[in-house]
Amino acid sequence: MSKKRLSVVVTRRLPDAVETRLSELFHVTLRDDDKPMSRSELATAMKSADVLVPTVTDEIDAALISQAGDRLKLIANYGAGVDHIDVATARQRGVLVSNTPGVLTEDTADMTMALILAVTRRMSEGMAVMQSGNWQGWAPTALLGGRVGGRRLGILGMGRIGQAVARRAQAFGMQVHYHNRRRLHGDIEKSLDATYWESLDQMVARMDVISINCPHTPSTFHLMNARRLKLMKPDAVIINTSRGEVIDENALTRMLRAGEIKGAGLDVYENATSINPRLKELENVVLLPHMGSATLEGRLEMGEKVLINIKTFDDGHRPPDQVVPAML
Image (cartoon, rainbow, N blue to C red; front, side, top):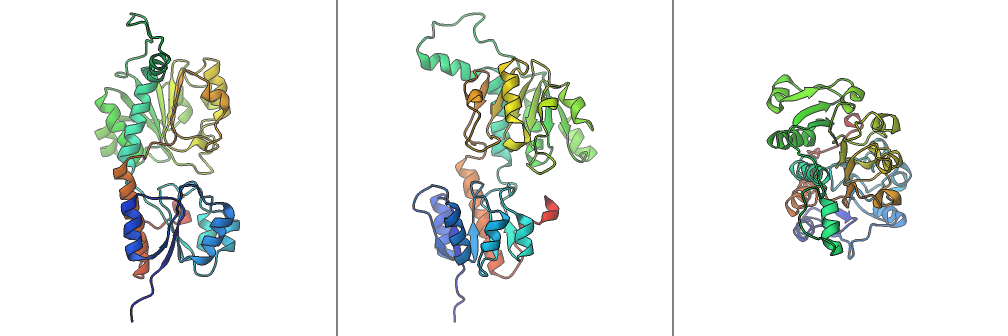
């Protein structure tokens, strides 16, 4: 007698190849459109499924998890970040949580470097001139940006992505500095030619570029608050491809408007799509719609991780990318 296939509910449209493979292996409910599920739709899915495959746009809090049916045994997140999932409550109810770490490291680091270049070289302002049809030709003093080589880059969070950013920055001739919960091993630090700062305040006050590459946790919420942002040099810029909640967005907007910070490159925002309208009006910012991980290769690798986590669980083993509260 053949084994009954797991019931899997996917909350968003995924690349065709991923959806096809899921359908081959499991009894899968896919989305016909790409709108996020409503809270009631999520609750219904969690009552009927063995496995839920959510994304960062799904808020899986304690109240939802408490309504889940007895069938739900695994939340196989399509993405590395899990701050939208109450992992502790899930664990208490015997629901495992897995994620897709590591596959987006290079893509996100590429986007971080792209934003550093875009902000320091004023690319968005140049594009606006071209799109307006008002360009009158080259001029010696027009849209003068700054040279990236020689600048001090302060990386906040020196995990996989932070280190990948450091390698790219090295190639551009930047001086790499970092602040992390724990200092890197000496060999890694030497290979990156990176200077460690135990004091985040002291590092922030001396950098030309700050790159946010740490996860969002209770301890990192508004880590770059108004007081710390004021420590930045007036000609410094800040880049965030990690989590929007790490920066006090309103304080950042005020300082950018006042010229107290030179510029910003943001791919993530404190309140998801509800971006401060004054921030969107500024010329000295480059704003992207959470594109840091948006490569086809990365999305397929994320899907492969989800598949492996579910298949391993279905075979009676611990998912290789299981997340437990102690990791957060």
